[in-house]
Length: 157
Length: 127
Image (cartoon, rainbow over the protein chains, first blue to last red):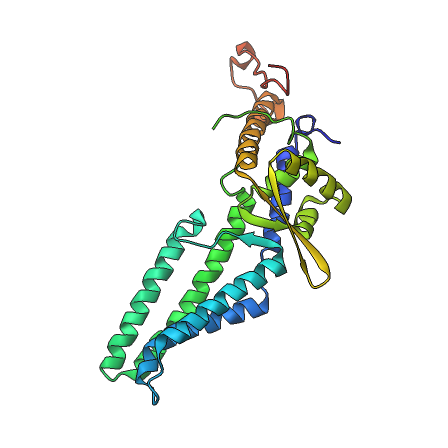
């Protein structure tokens, strides 16, 4: 068996291997589509109580969360890598994006409620569509941050 | 964190396995680990068992349909050992590159010849 200390490129080899592992972290088409549907459902919530049947928000949000969990499970199976659930703290390099995404989502939902209450439904739809696009861009940035974290060794050398 | 060599993860195959598991993922599947490390199934099985016996790696076995699926992750003890071993390796690398003439970017500075030569830290077991 090769000995790391006799091989000056041991750390370099590890960097290459981590890079290979990070390259596996790609989103399949169904995951991206699922994410888009998840965000579309989330930003459609303000419209639901104003619809013809006054649909309740919570069952739809719960269904969206269940789908999100299923998607995470499917992604782990597809990539062979189970990541820690992204939080405001993880991955560290994607923290600003994550905070911006959370603030943006809350702001978009608030704006939608405000616009709908004032009868500006078309403007609210535009805000919702823009918010979905922004969240998807944020998710891509998160993926890049996760890949960068895997390449960098997640805090280890 | 102390930079300390660990004889168990010193061989490069085990270092690869541990280094990949310490990269930030929670669990890594057998095939993903094998492909990233560039080793064979049997080598990964053998070395992961050594790491599991030492309490460095946790193994979870399952199956999807008829296909077996094995997942690995580092334990807290394993993570600590890998981090200190990698820190030690980084120190070693730094010391080697500092003592190599190429790393000094060709021309030595005036008075360089008078400076004492940097000696890399001792290897395993030679404390």
